[in-house]
Image (cartoon, rainbow, N blue to C red; front, side, top):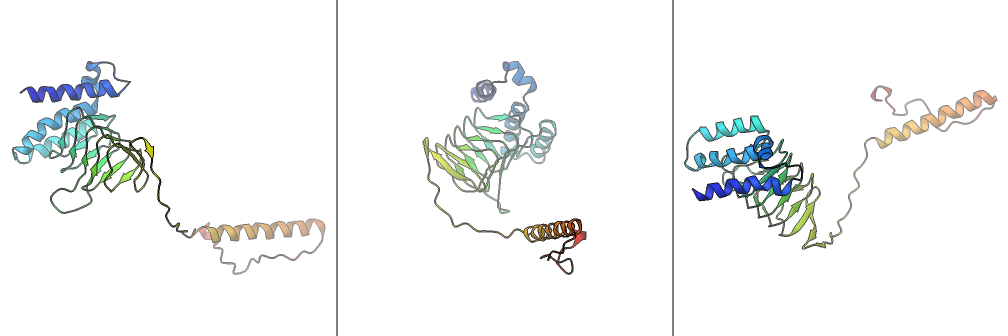
Length: 235
């Protein structure tokens, strides 16, 4: 009985310690959807582990409806878990989360496989995942790592590091910058470039004709208006 109480208190302290906007424990209990979601999940997870059919998923569905946070009943989450704001958070079935982890709104801890078994990420103690980031697949995010906002992480991240970008890459480790290996740049064609070039030529031709009309002179116009490949209907 002591362990559930200690876990509840750790979850309650987490917003007070990590959110400057928290105005005491009563504020957290009454108005923090992340706190509501994790407290409900812990009870639902017990039912899931006891193999109670249907009920855990049904309750998790209602928690999602009320809080905007979707936590699969099978997810294993450590103490002191803090979801800041929380709207749009999704945590998959085989996700494992350590102690003292913080995630922000819009975060997805998702899978990349349709096979049963471990297919969601493992987050070590003290990990922070920024808003709208996605951590995908059966990968491991090392202890005290930080995932930048909007990043998509699909590979393991070492402890005490910072990962950013799409796909995520480590830019800091143990407080020191990590050199990013040079990669060959691939120039993708711009489908709008030919049309813009044709528009520029047409504008230049029209300006030349207008100048000729004003001055009464005849100037050779380089651009033509017949079969120039510019579809006016497409503009």
